[in-house]
Amino acid sequence: MADKIPVDLHGAAQTMLTTLYLKALDAQFDQPVLGDQFAKEAVERIDFDWDALKAPGRWAPLVTVRTAQYDIWARQFLAANPEATVIHLGCGLDARVFRIDPGPGVTWYDVDQPPVIALREQIYPDRPGYHLMATSATDPSWLSEIPADRPVLLLAEGISMYLTEADGVALLQSVVDRFPAGELQIDFYNWFGIKTQKTHRLQRQSGATLHWAVNGPADILDKVTGIRLLAAANLFDAETFSRVSAGFRRSSRVARAVRPLRGMLQYHRYAFGPIS
Ligand SMILES: C[S@@+](CC[C@H](N)C(=O)[O-])C[C@H]1O[C@@H](n2cnc3c(N)ncnc32)[C@H](O)[C@@H]1O
Image (cartoon, rainbow, N blue to C red; front, side):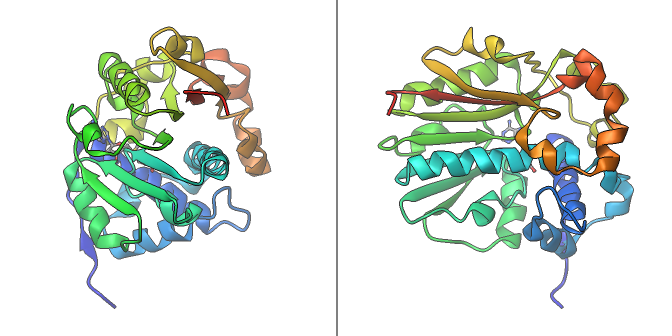
């Protein structure tokens, strides 16, 4: 067997090891929410003490419900726009491009910080129409390198909270202003998630700091001009929550009943440009 690939990541970049690992654990369940074999294989190839994350499989739905929901929304966008550009921002080691396997009319950009992209290059193969961009999302220049001749899907999963509100809003607005039409599919933590970040062990372990809280679509619609809401869900009312085990459903009863906890993980979908 080939040598395992070493990793040395810190802060926000390290957080994607946890999301990858939880997807890999989900892939081993009898009834997975996401069933991502790419995540399982990636974890097997990386030289890392996964047990040290102390991320039990029962927590997997905190990630997989979201990822599966964005897979559904991304497929819907691509079914309606077979000639399109996808910008998968803060991709980490997520294998969405392989799970979705878009058609030849789609150009796909996986964008993340340089150390993450360097690791990604060692793990996943290339494919036609697929590009990696090693940059910070807040660098003002990377977006101008992506041709703006087609509808765009900006899919930003698990990254907004690491940005400041000013940077995040500016980024969304710059996508809306640059492309003729498209969608923004992006998730957020609410105020409670940001305020209690020190109490979340996985978050603390990574050393990353969370900044941007969004409490509902109004927060985005008020600040980003030219967009309209297509859908908004939280962990518990996402359509993919129907895939979680009875055990997870039971153990999350209290969180579901307490409003700030229920709304902590928010999944939003917006459109811009002419209505087709
Ligand atoms: C929690 S992980 C999510 C990874 C992946 N989207 C997933 O769901 O598995 C957060 C990702 O956002 C990336 N990230 C955070 N801040 C970033 C920035 N300013 N520019 C680019 N990527 C960033 C991190 O490097 C990391 O890969």
